[in-house]
Length: 185
Image 1: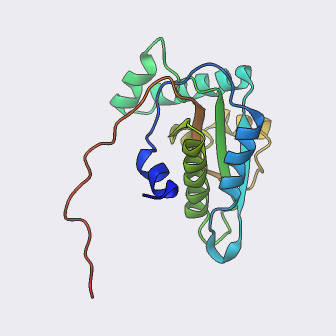
Image 2: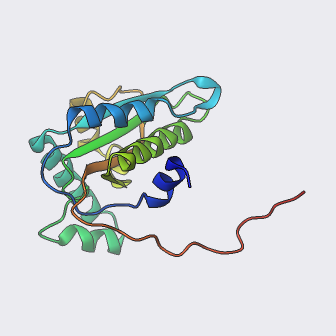
């Protein structure tokens, strides 16, 4: 099996991270993987925000906790009650991808960029996890203020975000659904 397929098959969502920050060279490799993702008519409609500042990560986490507690979703509210709550599982690096809503397919383009980052991270043995809650946060009043503080373009929407860091756990692949492929020849 080739290395690309090994990386794809090995990549799992990691929900426990070591506290040390990923190396700058590794971060740059992850980011480069993201910006080489395919986009509709090569628009590249994204803006990538990397947060490694502990105080800012704590602020984002507090805001997400409050939002989840008020969400009306009992699962989210229960998770946010935990004393150890961390929306990004205490990962030292958090990457937010926003995009121009006037682009043809900004949500898909930004998701593809994040997936490329996840695969680049896995190729470096760095864990990652999709974090959707933050995309909801930026529609709140506090979130709009945070968006400005993070330097996300005002006219852009946040479409995807991910946690990155050295793995403090390993995860196994869940069973894959069967009978989901139809080949017509």
